[in-house]
Image (cartoon, rainbow, N blue to C red; front, top):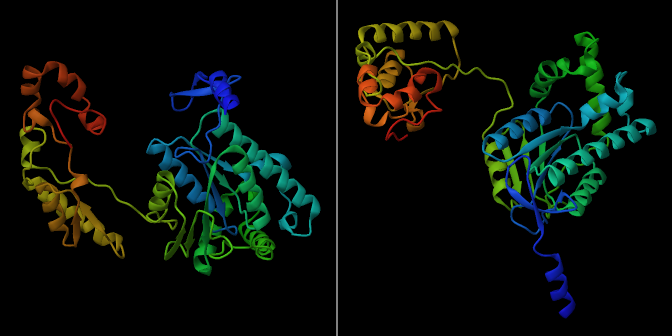
Length: 373
């Protein structure tokens, strides 16, 4: 007991260094950030993708990385396929991925370990919060290696498995994504598809999906058939819950999104900002032309969202389709400047006008005088 007290006096207080990513002060030892232990609430998270090729893993990884960075969680993606391309330089054929190709297995393992070393650098030295390890990781042995790596470094592991049995979705993913893959730059489309289908077969023979019984102690989400069904197991912290929420609300199949302003309003004519006026005659004419445009597009299952402002609802009414109103789409309130002309604002609030003069370009970046969303 006395020895422990002496140790505590000697070890604390520790030196501090600033996290280069998050700009917060953290304890360090010999110039390196001290590892955050897995028992702590805010320890780093290692997201590990699982699944056969052409299941949308890389798409999910990129979207998830962008989302987590957007909500303020420093995140970086590590694509093992890219490490393999840098190692081999030239891709020959699916033979490299055969389970009996010992040289191929050795190279793929080295690439995975190299990626994990970079994960350690990012999470433990650079101070990142989440790393996305994007690879097939189809065997329990590979996943066990990753789990041991995470335990040694004090990271939490969260698996994201994408399972798809729909041949149409798989074929669509191959055509849209894999044909743009650097592996097939010099191949024609038919050759690339045939080779990639054979590559998938190489993985199928050794694929061991996450199992509800055998893997019951792991934290994971299993996405089945492009979001038709989900299986979520042992979500243990806030970051993992945000990951699950996001993955249950994204689409990995392509779709078109049209962004359109409402028609001209009465206050637009008067040069006044904000307000909740209705459409002008020109605004109604605009809505009619928009309706004609949408009819020409012949969009199936069209969904229309509007704000709760009168001018947007009137525009949607003229379209003659069902629509939903969302308060989050309302224009940011101009505060005490609501329904004022710019000349009035310049006279009363000259300094604030300097901040709002680029209103049309920076509506979401500037908070106006006494305004609220």
